[in-house]
Length: 131
Image (tube, rainbow, N blue to C red; front, side, top):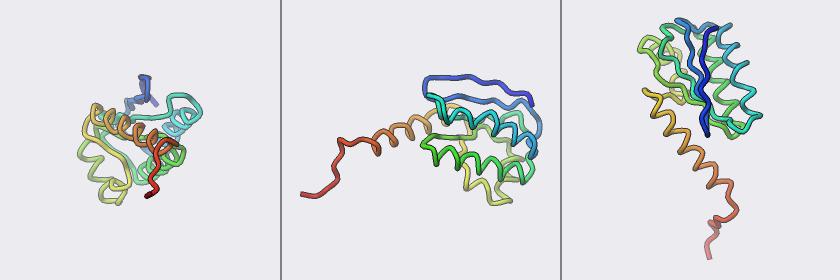
């Protein structure tokens, strides 16, 4: 699988440089992404602009991968879906389960907002008890 990784302060962008994501490619994506959960930069943006087709098993695998990230207090955002890929995910009722954005910039924003949300929820300084 051809891909490129660009690591920033709060996230890594993994750009898939393939025309199709099938189950084998989705497994490779998982193998690349999961180690980030043990690193200081845990959040992932999966940039899939060059992907023209995806199969249903691969879509399910990406949903599971995203759930694993959220269960581990990390973000996983898919950006730049081609219309055909988006339509397939919608038909399989997977799109609504995925955190997707039209642009990479919007994916950055989501990760930053989710990081702030996690910091606030983890903070011991906030007391919501009524007096």
